[in-house]
Image (cartoon, rainbow, N blue to C red; front, side, top):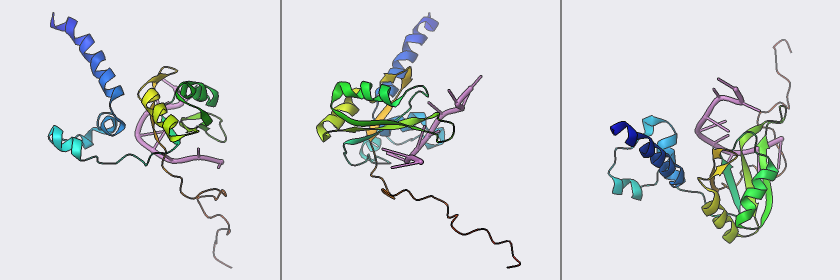
Length: 156
DNA sequence: TGTGAGCGG
């Protein structure tokens, strides 16, 4: 009879992980070596990685590879006015990289977007919504590696 | 097994 109790317990645990705040979730989802042995109260007052500053722009991860920018927009539009929604895709293959960005019109809407979509299912996958980090290396596109100079093979 | 953490061209 103990077996019969196991399944509901597991599904409850899954639900709790999915609905936990992202900082807590990484404790479960990322590498097990970072599992904390601190007391519960010590954990709650030491966020290892503080959330990004509130922004109208959201970083959404955990997306299904089949989720499109349109699907992302319609899902998040339930909670506010979406200015822009984009699933990041690989340039050459065109496949989704499994994450994207949603920009709301206002901070209030973006907060509601996180509350409404973080930890929820989209196209069969639990997605994570959080404030996007301000982008470094802004606007004009600059390649990461410096290929401006041809390689030097010696002999002048 | 576009196997799955991440912050875009």
